Length: 68
Image 1: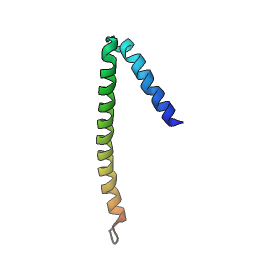
Image 2 (image 1 turned 90 degrees about the vertical axis):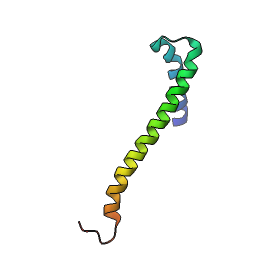
Image 3 (image 1 turned 180 degrees about the vertical axis):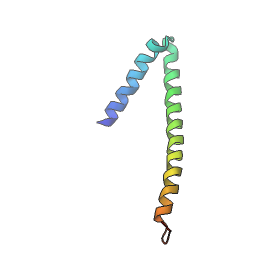
């Protein structure tokens, strides 16, 4: 079900992009691809940051014999 919602959100982005940014129809696909790539990179960076923060916090708790 969530995959259908995800595909529909991409469709809405594709349809609304030329209207909101007032771009030509032929460049809408390029903008859509660029936005998707930027979102993937931003998600990867945020996962690295949160993983590093939670990994450091989690390591202090998971180490046997750690002083609290």
